[in-house]
Image 1: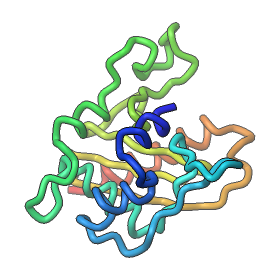
Image 2 (image 1 turned 180 degrees about the horizontal axis):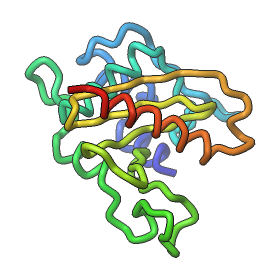
Image 3 (image 1 turned 135 degrees about the vertical axis):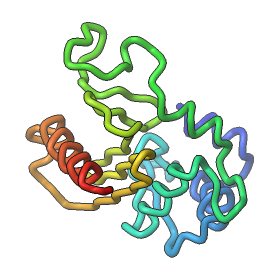
Amino acid sequence: VVGMVVDAAIGKRTLSEYLREKIWQPVGMADDAQWLVDGTGIELSLGGLNVTLRDLAKFGQLFLQKGEWNGTQIIPATWVETSIKPDAPHLMPGRDNPLSDKIWGFKYLWWTPVIPFGGDYFASGLFNQHIYINPRKKLVIAKTTANHHYTQAPEQWKEHYIDLFQTIARSID
């Protein structure tokens, strides 16, 4: 539904065209992003965005820099701040949150760890694709994979990788 609202707001451009104009070109992404489409050719805005590892890392860096790239504000800093902070009780992180079936906090496609470290947050995609961002350490980790066992225990895999990323972040002086 959000994709349809955005489509209506941006006119005759596709989501891909809008992304290219507003983010990909200003940041200087190396490759075009591709969105999966439904049977009618409409891009699936809820997911299915295919991006190279380098561009995934650049996108993470853009968020780490609060939407700024080479002195130009590409994404409003307030949007970045708002998008990474869950604000509804059922979206807050925690193992003992009776309002949620997830241990992760969530807002605008960004997740927050159960035990945060350095203000960290992450994006998580199918088959364990991740962008991990730790503002305190000024760290971005982008990871792609083809873990076809992902669907057997997706939350455990996510927890495993976030533990790994946090361990890396803690090791940085």
